[in-house]
Image 1 (spheres, one colour):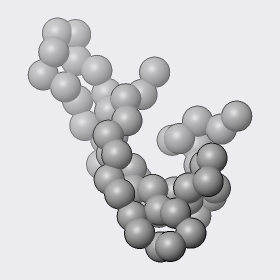
Image 2 (image 1 turned 180 degrees about the horizontal axis):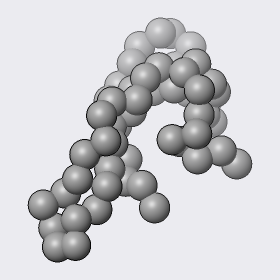
Image 3 (image 1 turned 90 degrees about the vertical axis):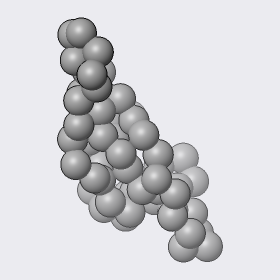
Image 4 (image 1 turned 135 degrees about the horizontal axis):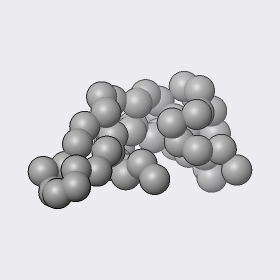
Amino acid sequence: MTLINQMATNEEFIGFYLLRELELKQTNATPAKDYFDIVLGDASGAGEVLGCKTQ
């Protein structure tokens, strides 16, 4: 298993491809948690932005 933040662009992820990773962000919670958005695409080439939390 590969962590999302260790994947290369265009690497397959359970039927989807990582198109790009957007900037790392932090929540406003205390303590703050890191998260980032990723864009996954399927074989059609369509992309969708998904929010992901780091662990």
